[in-house]
Length: 184
Ligand code: IMP
Ligand code: MG
Image (cartoon, rainbow, N blue to C red):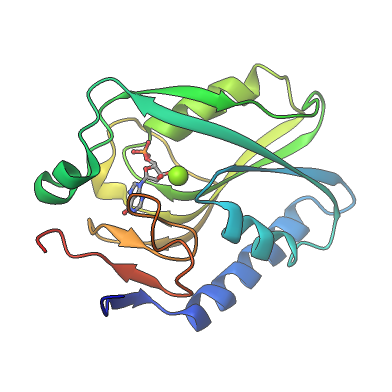
């Protein structure tokens, strides 16, 4: 494995995720919530976040893929990551979201296309409340005006991996969030 530069350490992640969990606990005090994780990148964040939320809770997962003119991963590294394609659902939620407090959990908010699409999909289920929690936010890359309710860290326009985030399905198991150099 190449040595990658750490952008956010495991200790910083743990502290911030605990704070986010405490915030969600306060905001939904006395109520139940459903965490809906976006596969696969949000799985590690969801499992840590949920253990810092002291509420009656359920888990669900939703899957998306981009299609259209998304470049190959190799091109993405050269020309910069660009989620230009449309988004489609590859796995819907398993349980009813109707009248539930839904917390959509994502690894990173980049152009905003994925979360714009997913919030529409989930709102069609008529939840009682829908909130978005993202570990990372790259606000400079936005193509759709999307903001999350809970944001772990705002980061510059770097391609990052680790703690669930991948490059071509690799690096998800790194405990820290690291920068993948765009030019190898
Ligand atoms: P958006 O639709 O452009 O907001 O893209 C969000 C999705 O793009 C995330 O769920 C990630 O899968 C992927 N993504 C965006 N930036 C990065 C990155 O820096 N590293 C890994 N995946 C990323
Ligand atoms: Mg993702």
